[in-house]
Image (cartoon, rainbow, N blue to C red; front, side, top):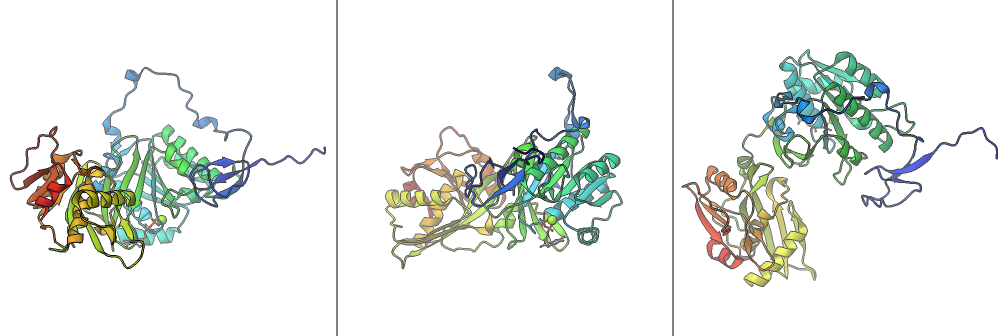
Length: 456
Ligand code: TYD
Ligand code: MG
């Protein structure tokens, strides 16, 4: 055999989740996505981490390590601080994901401006837009501080060098998929590149204590593109929900090593950037129709905060052999189950009805507490009888039609009372003593049959 040409080792990587395979595959066995495998060069050894990034420390007793809450820096934007768990922790890496055009760059420019106003030197690295474009956006959102430095760069080595020279208080990389490391020959945005560049930046951040925000693009299925791997590497994952069709934007904490998860921040996209929505319940109920059948309000917990949402349903006899079931914002399977329970327990035959159910405003809710809301909305839609507009309902519904207790009942009742609701239908859980606010009347029920008695 002739020697001379050294064989380049390659493997195929799923661009969605980073799964590695020696052969090309149509469907990824790990994440189930189709047509995501791309051939990339691999190196015999793990990426060489240069010695300056190595910690080379010795073990310390845990009581000798000092760390306090003061190391959190508030961003000055309350909704942002909420999703971060109180502020930016020094040395942390935060991934901000979302669809294109949802407002990632806008939000982080605003965050940097707030920090810069408080005399912190901050660095915004962009590989997507020119300095002029960033300036134009900056002038819309009022970002004009001299402490806000803008760097248009995609080469990792230059970015690292600039961060070291400037040692800013916070760095934003917009976006991680555009950053390129010359150590690898694959294209920017491929799994190998994203892993390498983000890994290096995260190490730099841990070493220097400078927090980095990594902006990440999202594929059509909603997961952060290519670098699902990234989610494991960073400390915090923030994700933009909602779509371009609505003006509000929800930022949800998917993971947080330094705070609660599932927390949400609510913003509204205006002419001058993202503005906080201080009272989300009022915001989501603003356009609620009065006295319409099929509409009901449910206090849902988003992280540690109760938010009132409206569930709407439309039930009408089907013209097709197979009735349609469409659920937007709530779990489809859950709706099917509840339809069967209503049929069986309440004797209301929904089997030959088309059912459309929607959470108004495009919010997504994923907790059993909305079960009773879905059931109430379906019953009201089917019977064409409106539910009193001063009523809220919540509770989990079981297969035998029993209404089960859920967490944080008191918080939910308080939020409903604060928003001026007069009646609350909730589970009769014995384990939970509730001292209701005086303004609201409680109806505690144990089964769906009792629901029918107090709903209308
Ligand atoms: P952008 O932050 O560029 O989105 P991303 O970085 O997530 O791709 O947001 C762009 C969208 O926001 C665009 O559709 C215009 C809109 N926008 C406003 O409505 N008001 C504003 O003040 C700004 C800066 C943007
Ligand atoms: Mg952008």
